[in-house]
Structures are given as C-alpha cells and as structure tokens.
View 1 (spheres, rainbow, N blue to C red):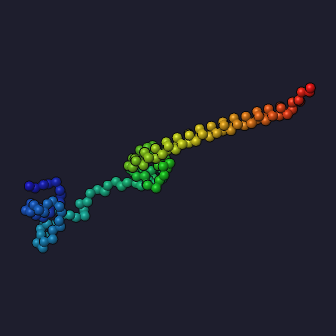
View 2 (cartoon, rainbow, N blue to C red; view 1 turned 30 degrees about the horizontal axis):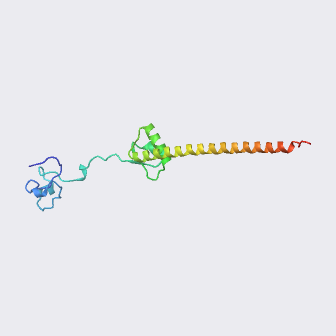
View 3 (cartoon, rainbow, N blue to C red; view 1 turned 60 degrees about the horizontal axis):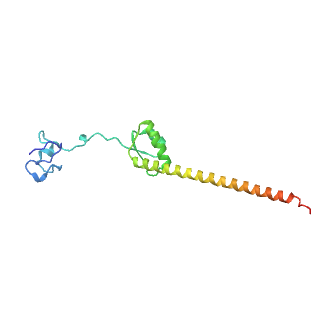
Length: 155
C-alpha cells in the first residue's frame, strides 16, 4: 500500500514495510535517490522548508503591547501591571495567550479592593468611637466644672 500523505519517504519503503514512512537518508554508493535521479523520489533539502510561524511576543510592559499581535505576559510582571497590560491589549485587539495570569490578577485586585473597603469601614468606626469618647469626656469635664462653681447652700 502506497501512502501519499508524506512528502519525503525512505528509498525502499514499498519493498520493506519495516522501514515505515520515517525518513532515512540514502547512503548507498549506487543509490539513485542519493544522486538525485529524476523520478526516484524527493530528497530532503534546505529549500523545502515550511513558512516560518508567527512568533509570540514576550510582554513585560504596556509599551511591548504595541509591537505584538499575539503575546505572553512575562512571569515576572506583577498583578497591577498585568491588569494594565490586559486593558491596553483589549483596546488594541492584541490576543494574550496566558489568560490564567490575567484572571489571577483580577482575583487579587478584587481581594485587595475588598480589603481596602473593610479597612475604611474599620477606620471610620474608630474615628466615630474617638469622637464619641471625646464628647463624653467634654460632658464630664463640663459637669465637674459646673459642680465646682456651684456655691454650697448656707444653713
């Protein structure tokens, strides 16, 4: 059975099935394939290479997004910078392949936001407590002053 799926086939792949379709360079002294005789098959050469694939850009800052169509955010980039890069890439239409990093950064941003909100709530509660304590202290000092200034009744 002759399979035409592969371009380069070993020399006697039809005669010896154990050769398979894996390429083997012809080394025989009288080999027609090695010499390059017409009709003997295709010999692997430099000119048969495939077109180069589009390379991925490694994005380390927002500036790197301008030069890329597709890219990976570098592992050393922090969560805040990752979010900035993701927003900018969305504006330009650049596809970022490691979306897990962006999702993790968004999760961290939400957690940070909630922590800030709870800290604000705690700070406002503390300020309210301090103000109420100050008011109570002022009232108690006013009462003590009033008691001092009052004249005792004569009998």
